[in-house]
Length: 300
Image 1 (cartoon, rainbow, N blue to C red):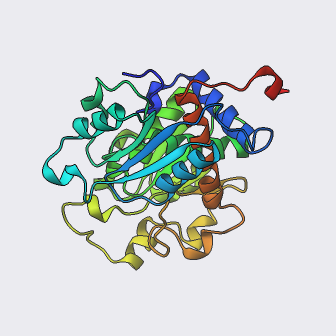
Image 2: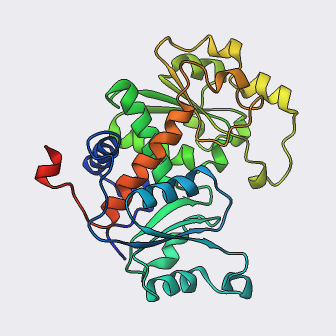
Image 3: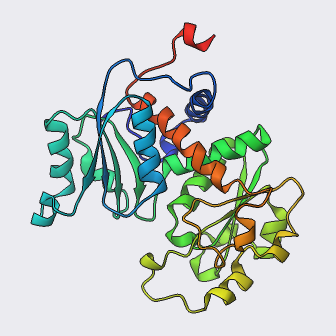
């Protein structure tokens, strides 16, 4: 398997995380117009719906000078029973240089051990979302200039959240802390649980998660207004936040459910900054996948 693939945030060392964040930051300023020295053919294979991840990858690829194709399972040989491995092997065989894949199966990439081109995981099941995690890390680092001792409260549908799993792993690597809050039956690690008011007051970054109805066996057992009151970030609850603390959300945002609509674009919200950072991070991981580094001249 290609060593420049990225499947989980825990695949990266602390040094590699900082290297990606450094490159992402460079793409926002000194290397804004940098492109790959050679034209690369890449395909985005999304087996689940996506807006931000899919199109920020596509934006990053186009900005780097790639030739980009977007695959849809509908109308493809997947509908005839083709396996994920055979689909991916087909793209490798016909000359693609790298693939971005989102799939509903946890750790789908374990099926792809004989694939030799880079694969970037755009989300697997309820398990991992490394580039979302990296853009969250970039947003946190831009705010606090460190991860040591930084406290992140992740609130909502934890058990179904690849975002929560990835940020927990990352903060363990980087020296920060994570707590989980929300309905207790949705908490994957009870040792990290805090009551929501305690979590909001404790955190430097309050990360709200949407309710993933599509991953529940049964419909949520409460209305939207009740969920917001009990487990959401209301304007009243936001008053508990520390003055320096920021609001985050991986999106899509269910306004008036997990977060009061007025807080989405509040002065301490970084939700749309996260989206902008997504393009920068995905440019950085695409560059890494192809093995390119900025030259010494470019670094000056």
